[in-house]
Image (cartoon, rainbow, N blue to C red; front, side):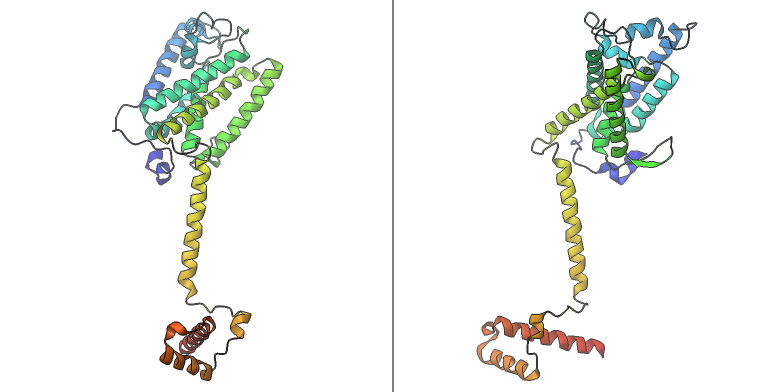
Length: 311
């Protein structure tokens, strides 16, 4: 499982644990979506493929209906346009939602899910307020969960299905977000939803997820900067690496011969000069040696040590 790995426990977003519970919000949401989809399919039996049917139409979000039927903001998240639609959404929700829920807790995860879905639906409505075309699906909420997962576990390695290549979660979500923005711009210009996909709702889900995680971070870490915290952790990591490198260098420095400098070459380390300095120590004490005399003794000591090692 993902939560058994070491890197799943790193980062500055962990909330102080308030006890564990066997009840999973992610599992409950998946069950709710599947149950609604089953009833949705039963209500549309005998209708051409692609039609929402009576229940799907009742739950869907439409631009023209919202002023009087505002509850559609919440219900559209539980209806789906087909088997593939719900399968992809629930797969992402399970794979990425589980570790996010374990990190931030069930209550905050539920708020994250609905805030992302509501903002996704709201932004879609602003761009389609005069349209009668319905939008359904948990994609806006799921995209908010995706962004939260990338913020909590940026270096988590995932394996893509198509093509089957490994990729860091932060890279995957960034690429997905860029594609979503580009398609959203294309939809805004053309006024049509390409391939029946509400990319604007996906973009709204990303925005909702970001805003909620920003609020979450300020709530539990009020003295840290939400934007600068990742940079601070990166700086701390680099600083620790540099400290380890210097410590390792000092550890092995004693066994290596230091390159002589021009100042070292000017030092008189003859036996006569060394004897003179030793006599001075006997008469006046080592505290009265000049800096140059100390360097002479240090250089003579190192040369003597080197000769003993060569024997």
